Image (cartoon, rainbow, N blue to C red; front, side, top):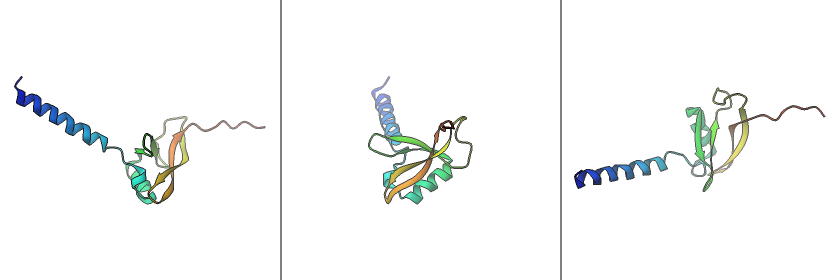
Length: 97
């Protein structure tokens, strides 16, 4: 294989890898309104919430959670404070005392 093809393939892989790094939006760089609008427009989205943390967030009303999971309230850090969003969780059983 010629050296130019190897160099081209290596460059293409580097460009692809750097584009994937930007694929997950960071809630800390957005306002609460922008974060909520992004979730509403995509119905479900994986968002970075910290240096090494990320989670999948969903609309409140929709079919983005698989049974028995349901949308539950969560809070994420945003540029303008804490923001209420929803993520899929299994509800706690309702056991009478």
